[in-house]
Length: 78
Picture 1 (spheres, rainbow, N blue to C red):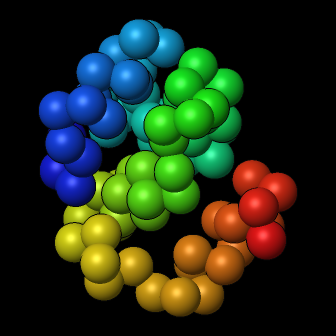
Picture 2: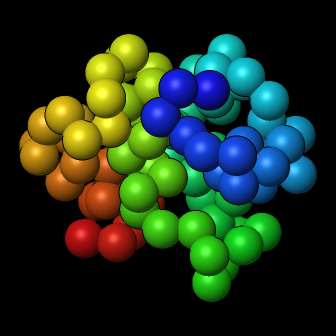
Picture 3: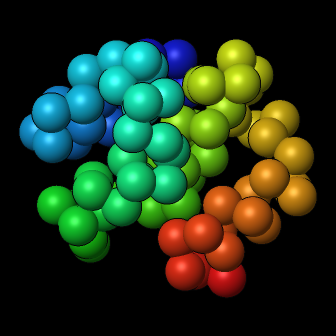
Protein backbone atom coordinates (compact mmCIF):
# COMPACT_ATOMS: atom_id res chain seq x y z
CA UNK A 1 0.00 0.00 0.00
CA UNK A 2 1.26 3.42 -0.93
CA UNK A 3 2.44 5.60 1.98
CA UNK A 4 2.93 2.59 4.28
CA UNK A 5 6.16 0.78 4.97
CA UNK A 6 6.69 -2.95 5.43
CA UNK A 7 6.19 -2.86 9.21
CA UNK A 8 2.90 -0.99 8.89
CA UNK A 9 1.70 -3.48 6.27
CA UNK A 10 2.70 -6.32 8.60
CA UNK A 11 0.72 -4.78 11.48
CA UNK A 12 -2.30 -4.27 9.22
CA UNK A 13 -2.15 -7.89 8.04
CA UNK A 14 -2.06 -9.06 11.65
CA UNK A 15 -5.55 -7.54 12.10
CA UNK A 16 -6.78 -8.93 8.77
CA UNK A 17 -6.42 -5.77 6.70
CA UNK A 18 -4.57 -6.40 3.46
CA UNK A 19 -5.64 -3.84 0.86
CA UNK A 20 -6.72 -0.23 0.52
CA UNK A 21 -10.18 -1.59 -0.26
CA UNK A 22 -10.16 -3.19 3.19
CA UNK A 23 -9.21 0.17 4.70
CA UNK A 24 -11.89 2.00 2.71
CA UNK A 25 -14.59 -0.45 3.79
CA UNK A 26 -13.59 -0.29 7.45
CA UNK A 27 -12.64 3.39 7.47
CA UNK A 28 -9.27 4.88 8.35
CA UNK A 29 -10.23 5.66 11.94
CA UNK A 30 -11.42 2.14 12.72
CA UNK A 31 -8.44 0.66 10.89
CA UNK A 32 -6.06 2.80 12.94
CA UNK A 33 -7.84 1.93 16.19
CA UNK A 34 -7.55 -1.80 15.53
CA UNK A 35 -3.84 -1.61 14.73
CA UNK A 36 -3.20 0.75 17.66
CA UNK A 37 -4.99 -1.69 20.01
CA UNK A 38 -2.78 -4.52 18.76
CA UNK A 39 0.48 -2.51 18.97
CA UNK A 40 -0.16 0.35 21.43
CA UNK A 41 3.48 1.21 22.04
CA UNK A 42 4.48 1.18 18.38
CA UNK A 43 1.68 2.66 16.28
CA UNK A 44 1.61 6.45 16.00
CA UNK A 45 -0.60 9.00 14.30
CA UNK A 46 1.74 8.76 11.32
CA UNK A 47 -0.04 5.52 10.41
CA UNK A 48 -3.37 7.34 10.49
CA UNK A 49 -1.99 10.06 8.20
CA UNK A 50 -0.53 7.45 5.86
CA UNK A 51 -3.80 5.52 5.63
CA UNK A 52 -5.83 8.63 4.87
CA UNK A 53 -3.30 9.93 2.36
CA UNK A 54 -3.22 6.54 0.63
CA UNK A 55 -7.00 6.63 0.21
CA UNK A 56 -6.75 10.18 -1.16
CA UNK A 57 -3.88 9.09 -3.42
CA UNK A 58 -1.56 11.82 -2.18
CA UNK A 59 1.80 11.69 -0.41
CA UNK A 60 1.39 11.38 3.37
CA UNK A 61 3.27 14.62 3.97
CA UNK A 62 0.78 16.55 1.82
CA UNK A 63 -2.23 15.62 3.95
CA UNK A 64 -3.88 18.94 4.87
CA UNK A 65 -3.73 20.06 8.49
CA UNK A 66 -7.51 20.32 8.79
CA UNK A 67 -7.88 16.66 7.82
CA UNK A 68 -5.21 15.67 10.33
CA UNK A 69 -6.96 17.61 13.09
CA UNK A 70 -10.31 16.02 12.30
CA UNK A 71 -8.78 12.54 12.30
CA UNK A 72 -7.08 13.23 15.63
CA UNK A 73 -10.41 14.31 17.05
CA UNK A 74 -12.10 11.16 15.76
CA UNK A 75 -9.53 8.88 17.39
CA UNK A 76 -9.62 10.87 20.62
CA UNK A 77 -6.07 12.19 20.46
CA UNK A 78 -6.80 15.88 20.05
